[in-house]
Image (cartoon, rainbow, N blue to C red; front, side, top):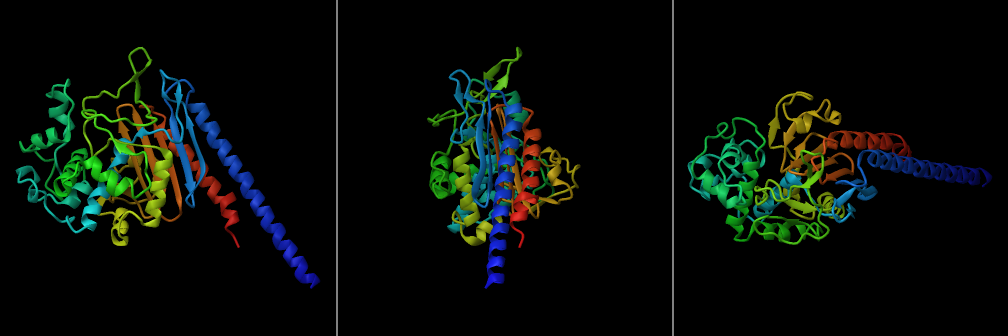
Length: 387
């Protein structure tokens, strides 16, 4: 009995020591992250909202800087920020939900819906994984010839595509990141469902994921975005200027989602719990259906090559995500916004960075943030998982 008692006391002491060690390590991690962002994000300019989630629990989350400079309104965890190309994953989920309901196939050709030469031999899946070769809408026509007093919408780009702009390559014969592909997917959702794209996304993705305050924003048909972060860039005098009135801010599908940290974390939990789609289609989200050639740091795509945590990995594109065997990621860049999402596939880790400016700090901040979290998980948190 005495020996048993000693063993029990020893086990309790070891457990208490591990809990104390993890608590100290977590506080050190939180302090290090806070110091990093306080040093880099000014209190009087546009800011950032960040979160680190592990095991579906937010172990750090905070807002820095301002969502509205004129009003001195701070960025918080509920500030809705423009996601830019991080929005593509939601467009992909809309398409997959239509596949789930047996009204669309990934192998359907786009000429089934619009009999335009530009869509010949292009499949839904090729639009999703950037192997369609479809022309880039931004250059040259809409940047050079469009009347900038008018907001460009998806319908305008569809009309341009009807003129059969020259493709980049034959469908399936290359890989080129394509914003055009994802706005065509948004148009396809409308064509098949009979609903406006934003309404379909709200009902079939955002609501299912618990994203209560997440919306698409079309400048041609503006809606109220609660606790909205305005987008900023510096003018010629070095002053922060709002750039939310950009003439291409009426395009949906390749971007235009406004969401916040709390909504995104609810969505992250929904993804990890497979509640948005059937199990088979959930598996397709992070399964690459196209390969991005080249080895880090020379894949030719800066959204991959700029990040050291990609070293030694092979890259593909899933459903709105760049994926490796153990990681999924995507970043977004648009006028006055920079975003980044990193999601581990082999452990329950998600890192979020949303910024409402065109700050060049995004790469430094996400790399440093990833390194701090990785060190914590390999030391303090890792020790707690032993024996």
